[in-house]
Amino acid sequence: MANLSIRKLDDGAYKQLHLRAVKHGVSMEEEARRIICQAVATPENIGAVFQKHFGPKNGIDLKKTNEKKPHSPMEFDK
Image (cartoon, rainbow, N blue to C red; front, side, top):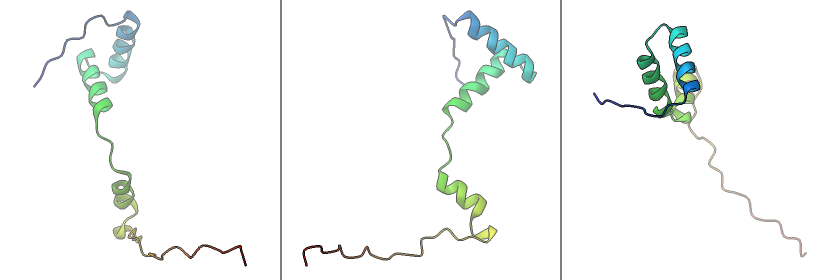
């Protein structure tokens, strides 16, 4: 595991981190670790989220079914 030291942390930020840690019942180090992990986590692909919650297992198929080509442009010079 990697280690990280943070220098020149604002006193206000330090106090807020302390309060968050107390609120969550963890150490300040654990609270900082959670904040950092949450901040750098890769968000799930929105398509995967919809497929997971609304996909075929739940009665909805999200596959593209309508593949019509666009109509011809209108002509106004007649």
